[in-house]
Amino acid sequence: MRIAHLSLLLLLGTGACTSTDLLAKPDITARLDQTPEVMANCLTTALANEFRGTMPDLLFFGPKAEISVYAPRGGLIAFMTVEPHPNNKSMVKFYNGDLYWPTHQVSGMFPDMARDNWHRADAAIRACAPVAAQVPSDAFAAPAS
Image (tube, rainbow, N blue to C red; front, side):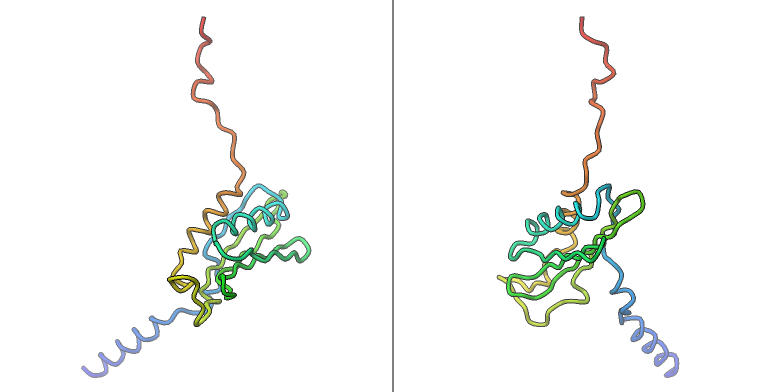
């Protein structure tokens, strides 16, 4: 009986840990119909609107761009990459602060890790996504006589 309990505890103990492989995967991945340079500049501005405080850092490394989002007091809370995708499009990857949380940074009332970073990054990506043309609802209506 004790062996069964011990094996159950070991199984639960190892399952409770999150691997660094899972943490290193992006939280959001999106393919957008813009070039990486245009998308990176737009995302930097949109992230500045979503994450109030400091302006995100934008660095280009050849065709790739990296955007770092900082807390008002200096801790790195999120990270985004913009890479080229075939057909002159962009692949955007957002990494939440799982790997980068500061241990004691606080801005305002709540710790930076309590912020809703995923929804803020999603809103920034949606703000930069090109709008598809839509057919007006009455486009096929007969002309009035």
